[in-house]
Every structure is written in C-alpha cells, then in structure tokens.
Image (tube, rainbow, N blue to C red; front, side):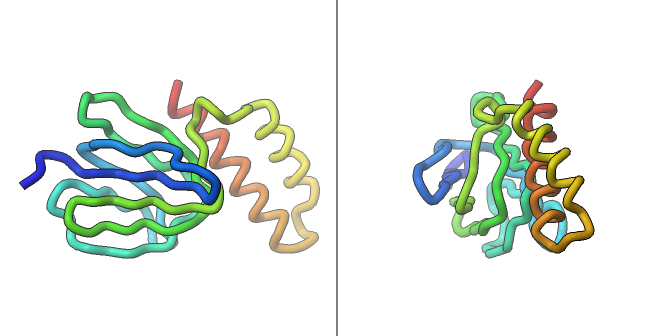
Length: 130
C-alpha cells in the first residue's frame, strides 16, 4: 500500500501541481473536507476557495480554485477546476481591486456575489501562504 496520496491539481489549461502528499484540504459545497490516505471514494463539487496540499516532504502548497470537482479514489486525489492558481501566482493588488469593484456591484445580481467570493478566496490564499 502506498505511503502517500497521489494528488493532481488541474486547471482547464494546465496541470497546476501534481505529486505525492500526506493530506489535502478543500472546501466543497457541503463544507470543508480533509483527505488522508485510505479515505473513502468520493466526488464533490468545490466552491471558489483555497485548497491546501501537504506535500510528502512537509511543505504545504496553497492554491485557489474557481469551483470545480474533487475526486478521491484509491489514494488518488484529483482536483479539477476551470481556473486554478498557486498562491504565489496571485496578484494580491489586482485581487483587492477586483474585490472592491465587485463589492460596489453587490445588489445588482448573483454575478457580483460570485466575483466577491472569487476575489476573497485569492486574497485568503496569499495570506495563508505567507
């Protein structure tokens, strides 16, 4: 039996991160989920949120996803999202500007709320990575 999880974080245009990990934490539409070796198979919808991957060497990878899917089967974890970026790739000033712009549009429809959640997730990812 493998010692670690095999994890792939994949966006529509690229593989953002893949490798061996001891744990994955992600936010699904039903709440936060932590995945360790031996986790029961599952398929869940992700929200716009931070994903944490504890690498086998002890480092932690912080990324942010714009929704998507989390699949767990046989100590393999796949995180699939239309857009996913590592915290180190986030332009925090741009995310803050997007957040302010989206907050100004609140009350005009669901898209503004979605934009607020997305910008907040990017800012949280950068803050956790520090």
